[in-house]
Amino acid sequence: MLHRISCACCLFFLTISSLLTFVSPTTAGASSPKSTIHAHTLADFPTVDPNYIYNQLFYMVTNFQHREAGYDNNLPANVNGHDEFASYWSQELMRDVAGFGAQVRRDAFNVAGWQERPATVPAFNVEVTVPGVTHPEQVVVIGCHYDGEAISTQSANDDGSGCAIELGVARAMGMYWRSHHTYPARTLRFVIFDAEEQGLYGSFHYLNSTVNGDTKNIVAMFNEEQSGIAYPLRYLGKMANPLLPFYVDMSPLNKSQLYPNQDKLTQQQRARITTFRALMQQAVTPVFAQFQALGYQTLTYHSDNNQDVTQPVFIPSQLNNLHLEDDTLGGSDQIPFTLAGLPCATFAGNSTYYDTNPPPWSYPFDQKEDTIQLMNTFASGSSKEARALVLALALPGMLTTWMLNQSAILGQAAADSKPIAAISDIGQTVVGQPISLDGSASFDPTNASNILNYAWDFGDGATATGATVNHTYNNAGTYTLTLTVHSAIGSRQVSKVLTIVPKTTVYDNPYAGYKANGIPPSNPAVILPTPNDIPPGQGIPSATTTIPLPAGSNPTIIFLLISLALAIVIAFIVALVLRRRSKRA
Image (cartoon, rainbow, N blue to C red; front, side, top):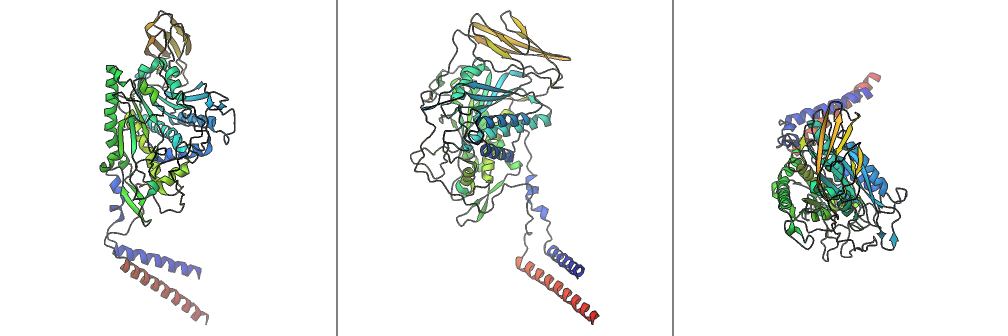
C-alpha cells in the first residue's frame, strides 16, 4: 500500500511539473537577478564584506560592554569589557592582515577619569602597524574610539561601529594584497583611541606624544565615527521616511571656530588637503558602482500598509544622500590631526539627538540605549538583523578602501626578496631628551622567521645596532635618521627627516576643560521606538533568488491544471484500492 501511494505521489508531482512546463515556455534563468548582476564588473580595489562588519560589531558590543576608560582594573568582561574589547580587536585585526609583518602596540597614558570619580588605571590606545614597501617612512592612519560613557552599555553606534569598520577595512586590504601579490606602498596604522568620551584624550596623546616627531610624514587620517544610522537606511524601514544622509567631514581649507589656524597652512599642507578632498569627491561614484556589482542593487522597505516595497539603492540619483563637506562636526578624534594641518576625513551618520528640535530618527548616541538591537530597530522596525543597517555600516568601509587604493594615499607595490625596513612611531624630538626608536616592524616577506640585522645612522655622526635603540640629540636642527635592515640575501633602507627642537609642538585640546561625569542627559524630545520583531522580510539582494512564475503565466489556469492533476491521482488511488478489494474477494 505504501509503495503504491508513493508511486501515486510521484505521478502527482510529475504531472504538475509537466503541466507547469507546458504553461512556462520561458526559462527562469533569463529573468533572475543573477544574469543582471553579472552584467556589472567589479572594479579593481579592495572590497569590504558587509556581513563581516555587521557580525564583528554584533559580537564585540554584545560581549564587551560598559567600556569605561581608566577603570578596568582586571574587572570581569560583564562588569567592564574595556580591556577585553581591545584585546579581541587587535587579535582579529592581526588575523585580517596576517602575512604582512603587522605589529601591535599598546600605548598607555594617564587620565583623570570622570568628575568626582578618579580613574584607577591608565587608559591606552591600541595601534596595529602594517609596514610599507616603497615608502615605509610615510604613514596613513585609520582611527576610531572604543571607550564609552559611564552609563553606556554596548556603545554600538558610538563607536563600536567604527571599530568594526576598521576590521572590515583590514580584512579587505589583506585579501586584496594576497590576491594581487602586493604589499602596501606606504605604512598603514590602524588605531583605536581611548578616553574619547572623557575629552578626546587618546587622540591628543597620540599627536602630542606618540607620533609628535613624525606628523609631517602622516599622509592622511580617516576617522571611522558613529556609522550605521545613515544611507541607505530609512527610519524604521518605512518608505514614508527619507533616506538618511551620510556625512564625510573633511579638513577645511579656511579657518573656522573649530579650526582657527587653517588660514596659516603651509603651501604643502594646503596642496595635500586639496588633493585629498578631490580624491574623496571622486570616490563616491565608483563605490556606489562596486556595491551594485556585488549584487546590492535593491532593498526592501515597508509601505504605509506594512507591505514590502522593493527599491533600488546605490544608484546615481541617490548620490546626493552623501554629504561631503568641511568638518564642522567636532567632538571626535580627527580634531588633533586636523589641527596639525593634515588631510582628514570623518565618516559619520546621524548626530541630531541633542538638537533642540530633533527629527524622529535622532539616534541616542552616548546613551545606555545605544545597542545593536536599537540600531536594527531604527533600520527596519525590528531588533533583528536589518539589511539596510548592514549596508550602511559597509559604506564608510568601502569609501576608505577606495581611498587607500589610490597611489597618492596608501597605494600598493610588489615586494622583492629584500627585507622590508620600517621604523615605528617617533615621539617627541626635543634637544637633550632621549628618543626611543624601534625597527621591529621590519620583516622578511620571503620568510618572516628569518633573522634580520639592524644598523642605525642618526645623522649626527652617531650610529647603533639592534632592533630597538635610544638616542639623544644634543643640538637643535634637522637630521636624517636612517635604518638599514639586512637579511641573508639583501638589505633595504628607510630614512626619516627629524626636526630636533628646543620645545615640542603641542596641539591644544579644546575639550581639556570639559568636566564630564559620564552621564549625559537624555533628550525628552526624542521618543525611541519599540521594536516589532515580526516584521515583513527585508533582504540584501544576492546573486541568486527564488525563481518567479514566468511572464505571461495565468495563475487561474495553473490552479485548474493542478486541480486536474490532483483529480487524476485520486482516481488512480481509488482504482488501486478497488482492485485490491476485488482480489481479496
